[in-house]
Length: 609
Image (cartoon, rainbow, N blue to C red; front, side):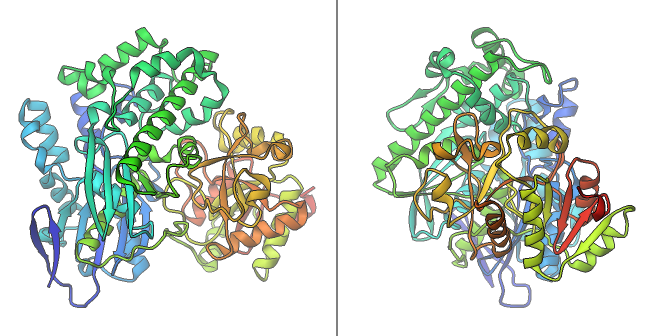
């Protein structure tokens, strides 16, 4: 018999016939956006994203080890979907070679049950709780998708506790300061924990009424982008602006309190049910006191760049205030971060340059897909069955055999395939094409978990050509021209090109570092306008295949550095299957596609030049 601590009580987890403990964590709220569509008709698609429960995912943890993890969007093709992750869950089972009846528990990364009374104050809130947020609603969804799974094996964990567990139990540390920052949990936006001895003691929390994540997302919406989706675009736009004009606005907008928390008065303006649902009073305030709202696809002007710059500066300042205050109060010198705000690479880079701590760890799937990871790990930890070691690059998704790739190639006409005998030959040919200015897609091994392409589902190019950035943005990614691309670099050479110490490991692409001034003109395609880059380091131990490619590129160019961006186009999740890879390749300006040891072209080799 197995047990899971839950709140102040203990619940049994019935054994499944063997000694292994298998837990699936899930995230997402399937009925969230459909509910909002019914009760608030006529909103824009961007406004329907002002809701909870996006980025559904499933993660399998077996005897405390992470076996498989994937976001549902990679299977259904709907970016940021909150639908119950049945496809991702089935992948996890297949990866482990087990069936659903061998799962001890499904653990959901939300638990609204303590707040049921608060949702009874008006009919719409009552319906929201009953149909979307309640544990009973989730159980109905599980029963609809997995009708044979026993209800007594379904559990719920507080959202921020899930995030915190995802950071601490993958940090490899015995003790740490853990801070969760996102738009909203059940009722909070910031939670601070002292993690030690396998437990997470909450020190402080900040209500969602003072959410830095919500503020950042509302201004993302105000500037013409999507709430709860396009915040990274604002981060990329910010270096083009001048923060001075709007710094006074943001200094007044976010109050840094002596206790290490923040207060955001403009978020308190929303008083009615409608205002709270859509932040309409705050949005009117922004229209009056900040700048006119920008329509989607309207031209970007200097005022939009300046607002983005001031917003990013405000976030940097606020995160530093929170983290330094609690580090000083606790005396803890190790900091672990999770939650959607922890995906802001600029703020993370700013924190990493502070001296208030010895080490910072940012869980690579810090958003709500990673909450599924934390839910499973927390459940395992409650049973003393978690293996806390530093997470390697999260290659936890599906991989495909050469036979499966060959079968997919047979589904398409007009492809020219060159087959290599081994990885060495593949890397040599690929490196030569990169050095010649070609744009390639690289599809190899298990798919990444989290938002970053780390060299298994990537588009690659030579960072030495400034025109490469514009070409990929316009012809391949079909996205905004202001957005930067990241460099992947061998860990052996990272200090040569970037302003970090020798052997610095930045394997998750979650923080910026400065490009050394003398090399900015030599790496223009990955150097942002402010001289920064979102660096990804690659080691032979953690990813030997991608490291081999970087070594081959180094022999061709003298630099073990390449431009790396996710293998997808605008509005499309990162490709998962060989068929998706081939279809995306054929419908973009990508020159070549490398799938395992096969080089695929749209024209015959004699016509490559």
